[in-house]
Length: 226
Length: 112
Image 1 (cartoon, rainbow over the protein chains, first blue to last red):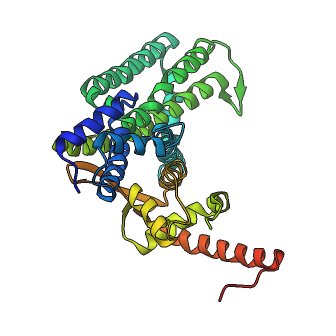
Image 2 (cartoon, rainbow over the protein chains, first blue to last red; image 1 turned 180 degrees about the horizontal axis):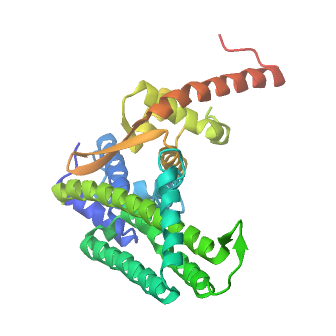
Image 3 (tube, chains in turn green, yellow; image 1 turned 180 degrees about the vertical axis):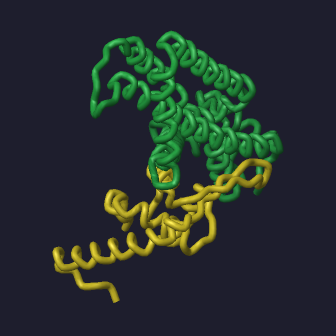
């Protein structure tokens, strides 16, 4: 027997009351519970709908539905982490390495050409542009925050601030002139950090976009059933 | 006599991969019922074991997922990825080798 829309809404509400707020987590729990309730009620037509839900919930054990949420969260973290690092490392492969080295070279040369004040202002302006772009993305896509896929995928963007702090420290020390293979060591460190920051930012942004796309696909389907 | 579930925990991933190699796509509850039906209720695949295994296989890229609207709800289907199709052969061989070693260790005769 198929459950009615009202019965499914009741199960959805039951799951939400247990504290499961992410829609993609709810979806997987809901389908499992609904399938189990349908089978129990088919096997025993005298069984009440509410009792069938309680029996199903008990069958999950002492942790209840948390077992599904935990595995969804861990699975998504691993999935997007794998995607992020594959993308990040891909820029150091044969296809993009020359571009990355060129980027580092440009940053190094800019430090040589520009005064330290002018370079610092350019750096701060660049960072502000990055964070303005992130704010714009977050603002536009806040509707996806109800999805664990989105939350896991954007998590890499939160580490960008660490790069900013480290690079800032490196720039403020760039008055010391120490050389390695005839290269200004401070300029070199700043070039490496900024290049890594840019590569990290691109990989994190790509990962976030995949999370947004997958959340949007789920949201479109979810709208059809609620 | 029911089989001790602890004994099949180590082969759970292989069981899931093998089921999905025989069925194009399956959803979570369907997998638990399939295991129950094949083993005539001797093995019960609990949610607490199934979902962590499914999501781990998905995160490792061995499974792919699609979602469909079925019976007024969104259903997540699992299927083998290209890597999963290759891995199922290796995993099955590993289990077969392990069973052969167990038979030697425990002086069991292979079932006819």
